[in-house]
Length: 431
Image 1 (cartoon, rainbow, N blue to C red):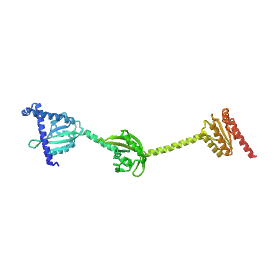
Image 2 (image 1 turned 180 degrees about the horizontal axis):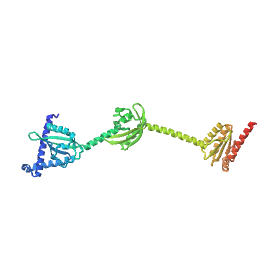
Image 3 (image 1 turned 90 degrees about the horizontal axis):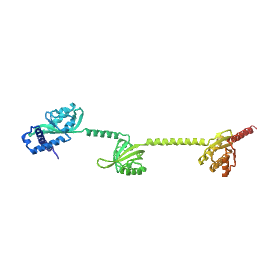
Image 4 (image 1 turned 30 degrees about the vertical axis):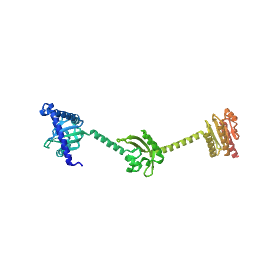
């Protein structure tokens, strides 16, 4: 166990070595200005070491300075000048490098250095342009051979980039924690390493979600989709899928998941996942689908009415003009509409006009025959109008029997027949 005496002994040893290097450096600098002492200038080894130390101090990216006990800066390396923006720091008072409201901290740190021999902490330097420079300070006292403090030295590490990274990290953490979507990190076994607040709320497990396995709350029917997603992630491919999760209270929640794999700073493969509750979206889709079905059904009903219109033309007769092709579905619609119309209007005669039907084949002919037979069961008569010569020829060639169906060449003839039948009915009623 390292004790305080050990620390003091180590610091004293460091100070002694530093004093020696500084003395050598000062001697070398003095020699360059023709004021070097003869003993130092004539010692090749000392000059070589001083030169090496000067190169080290002058080229290091860390700011290094020496300050007398009265606060006057006696040396600053180029990195210190670049950090503070001053071309020459020697001769300045150290307080010029601090903001006025930071001077109490400076004074306290100087007292600590002089009493304890060392001070380490965070401070702010004042740049020549006036902006603040956050720095990490490692300051030491320099003592003479008698052990008395004569100066202070230290290194100043610019923390601007580090603090900016920390600020971005705090901002990112705040964004993630307050994001409306669930965000989580898991290992490749599926165990949850991190979950933001929205994720904990979505699953209902709260803090207990950390350490759980994702397959513990994915709906059983979606496990295969989850395994397929893990395979794709292991191949380095992103995954987009919809799954259902079972909340702690048992509710089933559909979610849209986006996942991708990423390697952690420690080299471990991890899964980053984003989950969004799409319950409202699913309900909206179901409602939209139901409305679409209603619209489609309404359109079908309108088409049926338009494709098989039934028009009353007298008290006892209705007419159904047909236009276009007739398939099996429409043939059944014709029969249904004709029967409903005859029953509703209590018609005695139903006129089916096929003037607008261009093709009459076996299917159409059989549909007309079935319609006539069904109408006759209701006690009404079917009149087929609008038979063109080519249609008549087709019916004969097909051998279709129109027994029980009254036919006329034109719609006008059929209408006149219905009106005459209605007039006769009224005349017989008066008699």
